[in-house]
Image (cartoon, rainbow, N blue to C red; front, side, top):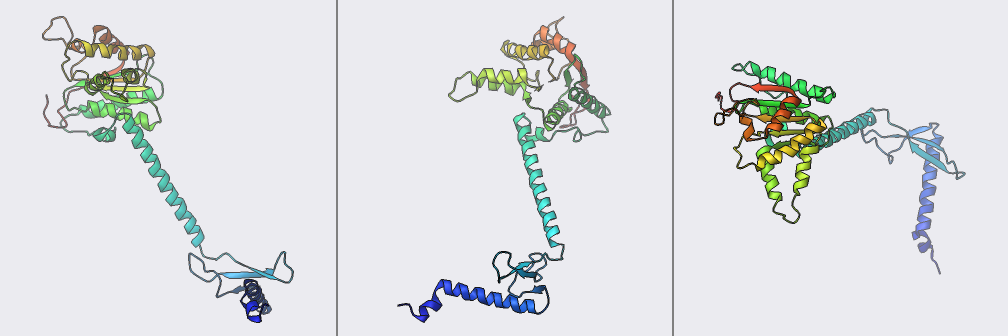
Length: 310
């Protein structure tokens, strides 16, 4: 048999009494004549911490029951919070974009110092007035290929002494292409490329395939091949590897940047009647290089690294 104590302690009874007390409280508050009252047990504004006002109205469904809801606070905290959230999200989006850019730059082969090479970071110098001029010429080339206004001459040739900024400006063009959203941008040191190619011949499980390595340079939308004549070739295999890459790009009219230490037309002191560059590439390719050149730019200043003029 259920006792009075059991009834009082039952959840349903307690809930009914709490509802009754709450309703009586709202009735008393409403009897004051004010339709909006501050309730000590109510919510506080999360921004200014002031007690919220509550609007008391008849319950829309349950007859005889009152319903209360908090009114918006008059402070501008909510608007500030919204602006703060928007600022926070903008910062997150900015960091994500910057990370995506860094990843794309790294995939292009611009790592380490090369990742920061830009036209703006190329230093002008008092001891080489031509520094500003070569920077402008290289930027003109970038503008031409970006706007697809290079005609039949999509290649850029940079040559000159060690440390004069050829690699920096070539990397700057590749970086601009990445930032412009171009896919398949590749910056490759020729000596490192050859090492990578040789490693692929070992047929190591999971290793790179030589065909994929060559195809990168053949079909890339923009390709930079740096320091082609930096290391004296052993035998003719390196020249043989360069031919299919450059010949493909020549026929496809694809933007290509090549950097050399010697000029394309420098004579070979050890072989009268032959060009020095013929040690590194076939005469047929040299001919194509000169024909396809949008600009052939000489870097004749002192080294940025040592200050020496080699």
